[in-house]
Image (cartoon, rainbow, N blue to C red):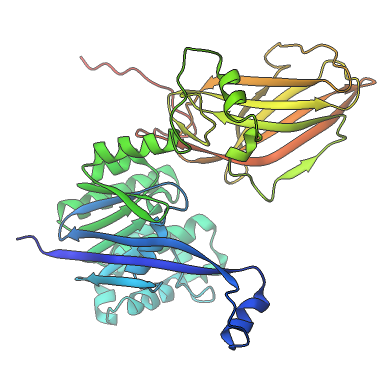
Length: 424
């Protein structure tokens, strides 16, 4: 009979959301019996088990409760209801370096973290050489960590967490730290843990890694367990959720997808079906104004989740407030660090709009194949042109919404060259 390493039984996590801090204070002091909060369940009645020596993945869309359950298992959070039983010593790769003292040197932080994990100084002494070799930051280990680059910081934090010989390893998107060579080292260590029969609980948006490493996968959706089973079946189900999360897939072939979308969402704006960035940068002279936009997946649905290798559309509707000569429409895709990855505009594509009268609207659609690696990106939109031979920004929306690229195969760098491989 297999021994259980982690048992999650009917776990729920409820957050009380208050409109004003004063409402929270009044309730805590007993000044009001009126309910001043909204209830939000990050997790609801979640149950699953991880057996010793098993690698179990957890996947789900943003906000599905993945990180919340990991924090409850590791003791960072307490459940509102339910019970967690853990049999074995845990090393958690969640918020790397969270326990570091910025004034201490790297060496001092290794001993500090090891002690916090329950190791004696003698036990840490036996592991210190492996930690230093894995981190590979040279003499910087004798300097205060506040002087480290972000790359050195996460390398040391990862090295400490993964070289203490835990019985249970919990990983939350941590295998993508550092440069590509360090990532290779991290994955080799991960494979080594699997061969040693360690228990692993693994959360990632990288469906390729989930499929490759996991024996079983749990799919979460809006705080509840939707399914559990073999990786291929659960990953396929997850992809269906991403492309079909707002209802039935729109049938293709009967009419243009623009007409389909216009009919389905005629009472709402297209952008109402996307999660918008509240901190977007909106500027321009408003000679023309971007009044609506959409990301459209290969099923013809408005969807921020785009499956790698499929065709998708970026669409925007622009209203012109003044007569305009040959406006230029553009989009840019950036990574979460702000680096511009790709983009184009109608001028680059040799497409001319011609003159537009005040009061007219134009709908522009860019269609392309998604070859970016599986991760989160940010979309920016723009309408510009030349007024009296002077370049003018009519309207720009920077970082207006996210694009989540869903991939079961990532290669090196930003995009996939889609190589055909032949071995003779």
